[in-house]
Amino acid sequence: MRKDYRKKNHEYSSLGSSNHISVNIDCRLPGGRYCAKCCYNTEMPLTKEDIERIEKLGYPRSYFVQVDENGVPRLRNVNGHCIFLDPRTGRCKIYPYRPLGCRLYPLVYVPGEGVIVDPLCPKARQVPKDIVNKYSRYIIKLVKMIYGEEVLLED
Ligand code: SF4
Picture 1: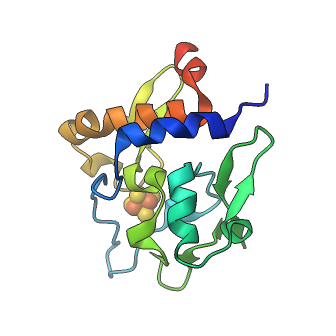
Picture 2 (picture 1 turned 90 degrees about the vertical axis):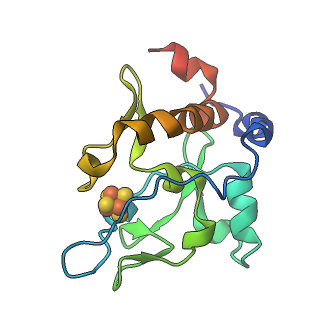
Picture 3 (picture 1 turned 30 degrees about the vertical axis):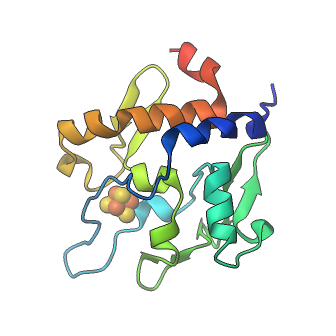
């Protein structure tokens, strides 16, 4: 069933400003280049606040938003990677303004498992348990906002 994404975004106010919410891990690889693995074939969903924040940088919504078949806005890919990735350096062109889901990655929500560290991230083992505990509630709020409460109830 198509979910009304717009209705969920009023809940974003309960998160306050997301600028301080960030799982800080060192994404540099040996040699200094940034990993950027999670920026390829991204399916990162966007909140209303994410979209408005990035629009204020001067990017039209149509430039960076791809709406999926369920009505969920997601970061657009070009050439197989996030439109904001500089593939030469592995760096994000809008890093200080990146979406909440990017700030929280490699924490992800997996139905049936809950909030986990995505094992696809090469630095997954560097994320300590206390960081998972600290940021889990933000992942849960993000999931509720974008997909609705029913996704959590399916566990
Ligand atoms: S996959 Fe992990 S280490 Fe690589 S850029 Fe993403 S968060 Fe950083």
